[in-house]
Length: 295
Image (tube, rainbow, N blue to C red; front, side, top):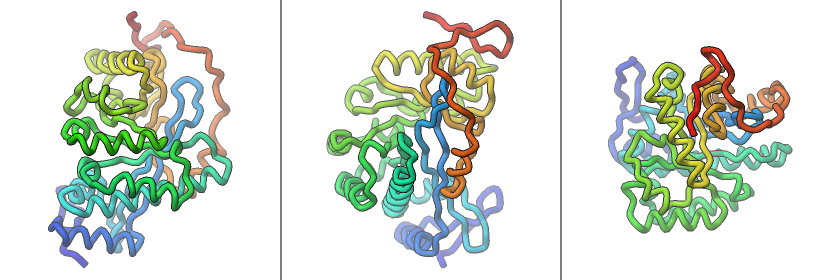
């Protein structure tokens, strides 16, 4: 086993030593230390399920859970991210294909794509190969990319994204507003939706500036013909604000914690019925009814 070191919270992580960490990731895959959980996304107004985001988890043989915000950046320092990324993509697509066969329709899976993966000249071949192997339709896969990753990419990477989009795969711009925001990027890359980072969503009820940012991002996205997903929604008040701002979809603990594949069936069975979509609700009176909207 590779050497480990302790993080600030006391957990142990494998050393990120280039090819050594890549071997550790390969071992983790073979030993089934790595797994995926899936966080549901739903329509803000109707509560209709709109998909799942795949999130990686790593449990060491001694039971220690490695936080993804520790091991993913470590993987991104070298070739390990390609192993982790391809395993995540293949596992998520296989799960989504199983959902489809089980009759869970219109539930695409979202997979995060790092900047280093975008640099891989074989990216298009790998993604299309995984879809062919798993039998998942291209429209049931969403690739989430960060602003920073898109902003720093060469023309070849943008061509790869255009190729993937042309094949029917859907692209989403993640954590919008936290990186190098560039409206020119939205023109060059055919994303279908923006995701508002949870730091703005969770602050907007108490912070007028955060609320203004959320409202502005929704308005901008809709003006460009894009959808909007709010991350980190944890309270009914946050959902009310998103309704007032006409946000399209949400994800977060208010809806559900990330689920194992076994937990998805129970989640779907226990969901309340769909709410009739009666258009954009105007905010009613009261302190928790949501902010007044402009325009």
